[in-house]
Length: 222
Image 1 (cartoon, rainbow, N blue to C red):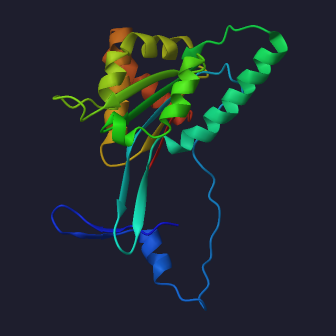
Image 2: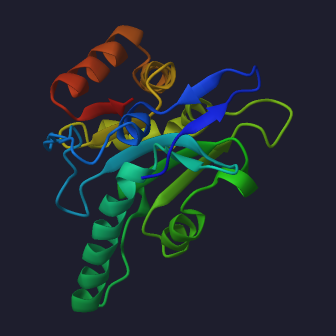
């Protein structure tokens, strides 16, 4: 475990809750832990559609005493993508057909800079090149105007709203990352594109709330 311990630009000391707790432990102390079931129930079949929204950024700092790494919302999705990749590879091996629909697996990733923060870049690009996924990216600081994942959702409104409308019974929409503003902004963006699809805002809100109650629209944020 890396220790989170640094100063902000305003000279405010920041210490990680978990890593700071472990730093203060002594050898004679015990720590009780348990596993908590996650909220993301990924589909088993690679043909079941899923939209994964995972913004965040990679931040690494070194000093004389420690270093830390802050993760990103994309991290919980990588193991699922690896499993889906293996399923598709097995399918293609047995069927000798290359008719995989990349729109069944949509990954929406956001960070500040493409060259600094694009975690899992090589892996995600490989999946996109193999047409296993549809990759949508937002790099908020690489241009004059800030572009976030919610902007990209609206920009790709036709593709995403059609995917949702045609798969209402089994679509999964998972959001992972910072819990402060992003989850609600992403939900609002999905509601907006569905409002345009249905030409009815109330129907769109009702659909998004229904998907959330059925655990097809899930927010796993911290």
